[in-house]
Length: 540
Image (cartoon, rainbow, N blue to C red; front, side):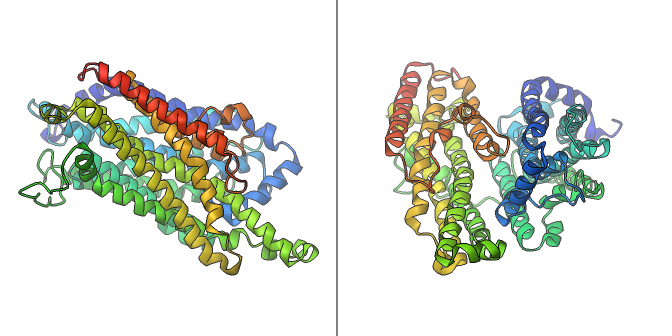
């Protein structure tokens, strides 16, 4: 480019793509494969009018609207309409997560590791790194969008049309670019790559919760949530292209602001002022456990509060989701008031099972982030300062593992408590007892411990492959949350420890299974230390 601020942008783009090609390929295959695979399966699931009527009745309930958004406004519902209703909200979520990752990875993460400083020492423009990052996410999103549209085009699903297929693919791409722009802006504000990631996910979470609330209470207000724009595309209904233009506009505006701000801050620093640290360490700062807890304090608080709010937001619709008297008054008259209340509680508990899956998978995230500090900070050389003192590998490993597990369990508990508190308020005298909701806590917590154990095993024995542990909660969420809608076989849902849990809180906890999972998780953690204790500290 002629402007010196953007000098060597093309070269940096090529370097980024060469470095990230495997990650880009895996993300693209995961997202496009999910979309195309589901499209190929839907005709078999909902190919009859009876099946369509049954699923449409389910999708129109307040509980499902809060999870998946409203059903597209087609006059005659088809398999394609059902596909759009079930897939659009969560495909947007996955694409947003992909863009947050790449937007931080190519900007502040490179600054934190010193790569950007090395690049800036050569004849590159001040804006070249950010511009190259923007072009990379543009290439990635366009690739994913085009492949997704082509996958739908050749799927042969009943009710599809070219306009809807391309709107689906390009709409997902535009949604991703919008969150890439928001993340680029967060990267200028936050003090580190970790801070930029947290800030971006806070924005994503707030927008998702706002979308959920407006979809149930007043869908017209969903226009103000930004996240809801993806459902306003009304794919295979009216096929509205205007929200796509709004997403692109937000991407351009936020990206432009980020390009302006990047020249006003110091390399490796954010625009938010940093509070001076203490002159002397706190008396509580006495080892690796308290050190990591102090370093992660802000993110831990955000996760705990955020999980409680998320649980409360979902719990607030229990009064509507479990109101059989209003949704089916004829049936209510036939079975009587007592039976209606029992049926309402059953509906709420069944819904709570799906919510518990969301909560436990989300709660796994802060736990894995903290646990992976063992290798991540080791690679950066941070632990050398501890190992130079009388801090053993045993103490470091088990301190971080214990903290990570406690954080994950507490985050999950906060989600359950938030769900109960708001649910009790919305259901009044028909509220479900806390002890019933705690079945979900006791049932899924062992699965969380197994996931921590799998990650610990990677850290100890295969440190360079530790990120593969993220597949466990990711697939667990997909197989359990959408598996029933996609008619997954039992063996497919049992591939992760989350699939070993019975239908809690509707049913009682199977304590024998829970005990087996806890024993397995602890064994994996101990085994992980065996690898960590005997390998080279620089191996990762």
